[in-house]
Image (cartoon, rainbow, N blue to C red; front, side):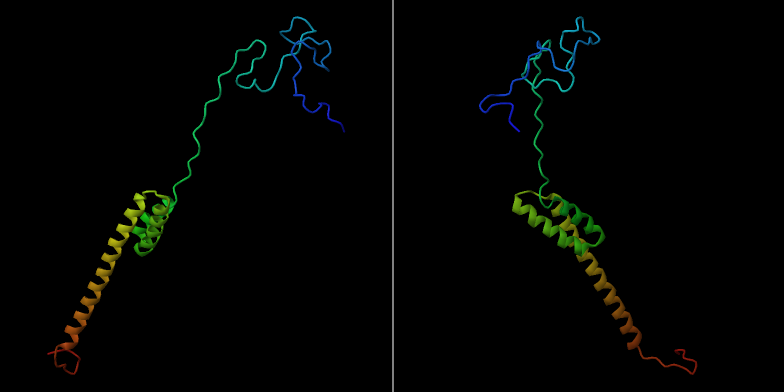
Length: 157
């Protein structure tokens, strides 16, 4: 198959004054004479190009480029939430988020809050467990360290 356009020759659209092949002598609505070109349908002309009876269009507005989400932001949010649910896991996830954010130069505020809250809640939980253990040990010590005599029914006198 041969190329209908020789190399070095740019493609040129037919001028609107030439009759389009395949249309014959049909008249279209709004067309006074059948030998005029039929109305053009389809896409509008590219910005800066003139078409018959139209003014040039302004160029399309430029949209801002997509800015990717800073690394560690999602993990910072997850670490912040985990600080209230499972504080030790919040420490790990928030620390990882801060590490990723630091590499990219992003200040991850939720990661910082998640780390500090996780540390505080974990330390409060540890203190609570230690308090309960000491209370139980003290109670057992006082119960078993007192000397008492029991009667035949198992009651102390």
